[in-house]
Length: 148
Image (cartoon, rainbow, N blue to C red):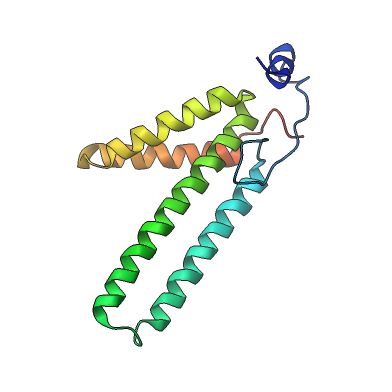
């Protein structure tokens, strides 16, 4: 058990140590506040909109077969990038809410596996959408323990 985890277990919610906010999307080195999560999701959405807008503005120049191939590659790359960003954002935000990094990783993993599995079954897909909406609401409106 690391020193960070020992500190978290020793303190109650009111006395929890302050953890620095981390915007680094390449490692899980800290928590993420509500505003930080909003900024992260807004930036990734803006990148996607700009990328697809530029692609479609160049589409009249490209051959139709090249257009479809590039579009497919772009959609797959952007989808994987967004999945990675959302997973890291969820983990960091849940870490701030729960106060335990291992639980945050576990809950995020279970959530994304369940939502992925639910997307293949039409009736459960609607339940998955409601769960996803509730989760986003929780991430944005629940006050965290670690970032003051």
